[in-house]
Length: 80
Image (cartoon, rainbow, N blue to C red; front, top):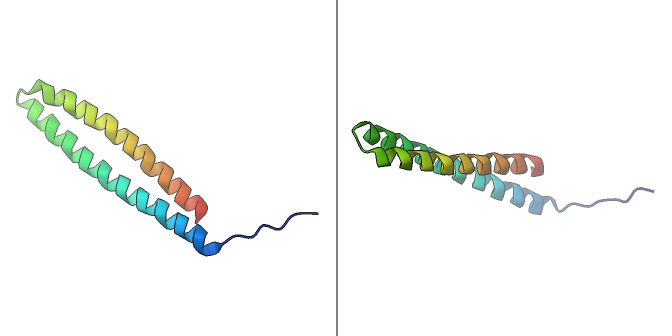
């Protein structure tokens, strides 16, 4: 015989909202990091080679934030 599973719908919806909030925040952080990397690249064009390294480093952080964003969306969609 199959067991019945009961779900507290309001709690599940709350979890979904929290992950959607995380997804929104990580998207904003990603946009800020993209702008910062673009500014650093632009200044590197004028001779500040160190800024090119900072731009690369910023892009690496942004890639991680983008992955967190995608995971949050996936979890939010799966829960909701």
